[in-house]
Length: 116
Image (cartoon, rainbow, N blue to C red; front, side, top):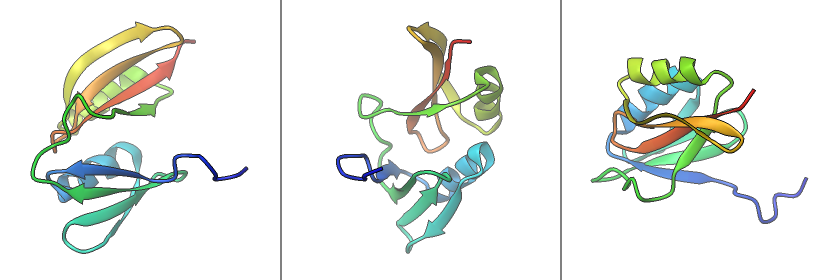
């Protein structure tokens, strides 16, 4: 499969690199590589991306990164246990359900699951 015209890398601004690493290591088991004091890359097993230190969290009106889950209720509970705030509780949409959360660094994400 060609890499041409595909998203190749995602870079996410965060206010606290250590908090982002701790959160995503615990939530998804990602691995990380530090590149100085202001940047770290991550590998989720399929996609490589990075977190860059920012003075402010990315605005909630910006691009939304959405993760897939086979068990939405489990992951809703997990993100809360790891210190995230639920910004939009589970809701249905054509083909699935999802919720939004704000991680401990102030960045908003979503997790979705297909309708069974």
